[in-house]
Length: 127
Ligand SMILES: [Zn+2]
Image (cartoon, rainbow, N blue to C red):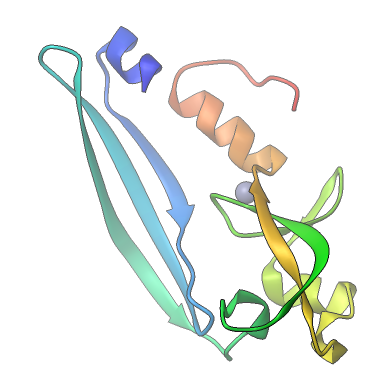
């Protein structure tokens, strides 16, 4: 938001807002307005139905384990350098066989971190 105000330039960022049974690809635009105001707009670019994922269902009971999901692209963190699509991560972490699933925390993967910095005109940094 600071960058949009300082540069007086609109920023557009891709992000995901998935449902358990649907991948939703969206974009958000932040536009500067007079007197330090900002306008936020977002819209759905496309939706892809998928098999319902219990991991994303808020009604499923959770353990005290925590996994990290990227806030922008919805990939799951497997290690510092490895992030996978939810479906692949469920298999990699053997979560489909679990009666209770881990809690989900949010962060930013390297790719989305770099995309965000580029959108606001900053160079790639370190996480
Ligand atoms: Zn990401």
